[in-house]
Image (cartoon, rainbow, N blue to C red; front, side, top):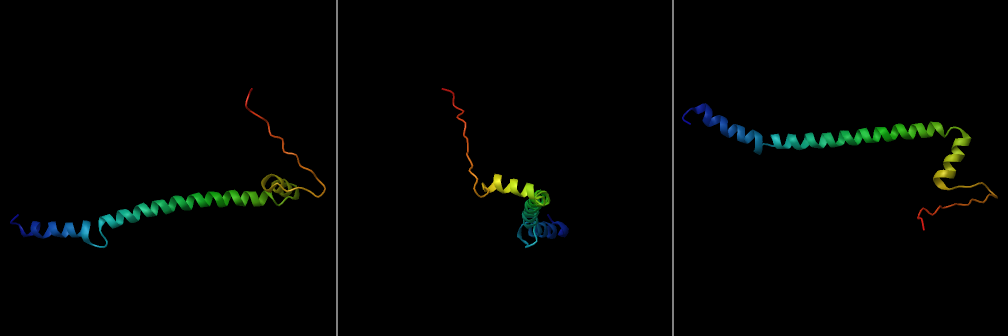
Length: 91
């Protein structure tokens, strides 16, 4: 402990790792946040690709009509729709 280098180095390391605003702990927190944001970006890029494929597929009027019928339960004028539900419970 009599060495001046050690006496100066230990407080400097404590300062740099824990106290300073650019400390290791702050950098670790930012790295975790970056990883979280990158995973969010990849999720939304996949969703955008899926939506682009859906939009491209809906260019056809028949596909657009099918999409509206399935997704939003739309129907043509003067058309009746019957929903048949099957009872899966055996008696």
